[in-house]
Image 1 (cartoon, rainbow, N blue to C red):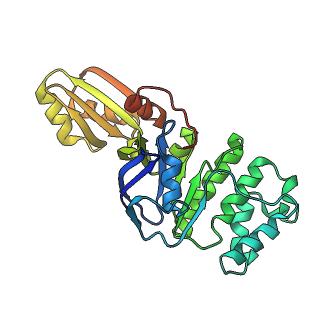
Image 2 (tube, one colour; image 1 turned 90 degrees about the horizontal axis):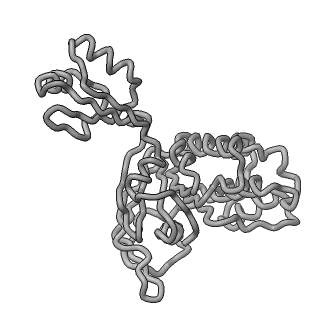
Length: 289
């Protein structure tokens, strides 16, 4: 999917300004932004529930979505919902095709119960399954773990990972729970004041930022030539910063082998929360817009 220079205005106010990014099948992208950043508006444009905007979205013919809370019928069963929405998409619901997913989401055994008996978390999970009934190439999920406890959230996130891998579905997910984004996403878009502030890979290979201060430039050069721990993000005369996924002990093992001693060493875990704090200078607060 190609999102090309999306601009959206409401009553003369710019909500999104020239948003562009590519989105691959099988990829899980996290969308992060503070109050009024334009996250929900962008998701609705990609899902085609907002039709008037400048720019274009290519290859989004087959998109599923769960934006805001799912629209459900309290007196219908979960199974009746799946059959009903499948018919809307021109399909016949086949339970065996979704059995593995439904069991993974702990919904299979409650399909014959009416939705009014479901918890908020169960309703949210049913909404996720409904978003997949049109066999989408991409799924747009706004707060998919809303109203769920930690254990249930982790179950859902694991199913989203499996879905992306096994069904080759690209997933765009927003959440006020930064730990959810960190757990499931391999790429993060930072949205601020209607523009993409940064598009960053976020993987286990770059979970730490190591800062090493050497006694002299020669030692730094020798270490740089031998290290294969990760990418160098900063280097000066005697100081180097590396993004890596390795433990500190591996770094010191190499330093000992090279006969190099450090003046100073710091290791900072690169959590999504502290990345956000550095970029935006405040706590993360999320509301709809």
